[in-house]
Image (cartoon, rainbow, N blue to C red):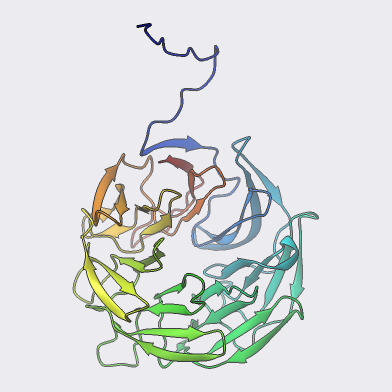
Length: 361
């Protein structure tokens, strides 16, 4: 029997990345946290706005995966952080709401990748900072909740990219500030909102969940087993939704649970190895879920781990190169995950990061 020899790499060719490992990516042109990231139709990725050492940004840049490089593109017409972003018809990107350092914004604008420019579009009826937003299956964009000054919002509205207008829709039963929003799997086109806080309620912390129907109505969903704020939610391949981490009113938690929209019920899932507040999560192409970073009671969580739904088990990934939170996290077309920017701040300062790294499953 002939022995198979290893295939030699060309001189100077990089070694293939190891499974479940991180490698450095090119740094952003501008350090930023609390910005938005949107995958473009050509596989590039747009990052816009955010915060740089307490200065709100209007700048935007584009990541080129094949070249592992960033290039500056046109700046937004308005300074923004904690806004929403979604791809819309014509390959454009809608950005709406957020804050400019002086208050919440109602304005919205569209990015044209071909021209590299931003154009104002219809404003929302209500200024919204730290709002929830998602792209619906019919191409419209749902914006819900948020904060305007000291007022917590339960109202919602929808952007129609064909008409270029916002229209009011039904309100949530309660504000869900720093909750999560997830579009459920087709043919169930509803939207799940989970947890968050509402300081108008005695407890402040919410276990409550709601479902939005594209017909324009909200209905109560089964509550989670515990209140959660600053947690993360990810749609799983079987149509269920994984919720992990967050703060439960007493402590930052490692617990996880899964929502079944068919049964309108939650079930426990295996806990992460590390408690995480404001974790970054993204579904991977093999059906697993990557969870990265965030805060815990010991400081920043530099670890990363991967959830395997059929096994209901977590496996460790190598530690990230930089500890970070409030970063962007994006699944690229080649299956790798790009994590960019974020903050390593503490109670005394906010230190925005320019660094970026790639995870290979």
